[in-house]
Amino acid sequence: MVGQGVLRECLLDPEVEIVLAVGRNATEQHHQKLREILHTDLYDLSAIEPSLSGCDACLFCLGVSAAGMKEEEYRRVTYDLTISVAQTLAKLNPSMTFIYVSGAGTDATEHGRMMWARVKGKTENALFKLSFKAVYVFRPAYIQPLHGIRTKTKWYRALYAMVGPLYPIWRLLFPKYVTTTECVGRAMLMVAKHGAPQSVLENQDINNVCRNGS
Image (cartoon, rainbow, N blue to C red):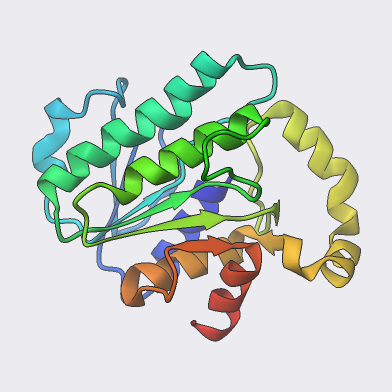
């Protein structure tokens, strides 16, 4: 869902020359500056490495819900996949800015009680050690999908169907913990272009960048 929002903002931004989308499935978007690479094994990018060079930024939005998953399985998707991709990109594009979509409540100590938070924290910490120009971590809380964007997770769709109509109330009562796919996408682009004062951006920081550009 976040990836759809980021892709939309990239395609709308006149300063973005080319968008390279890499994934297992097609985006189903058609645009003159969109290039797509369909690749089954995202843990091994060696076959497509020549196409990954020369990129200024990676907006990494891949992820899954931890609901019903064991820690080993969740770690393979969240930590192993992210770091494998990031290591390849760091080797090919050391001047790249890497932006990772994490989540509110992530545990940077890696020792908390929440499994998903520990794994996310481990992933963040490993990314900061790689040889990119810069690494930024986004920790959004509740994300309201806009512009027809829908989550691919069935129980998330059911949840959004129930709470989505209440979004104006959530935004009024809990502005620090609510954002949108549009806002996350715009903020990621701004940080990719201009950087940010801090390497970890919580939900309120994301909204501030989206509104004010800083």
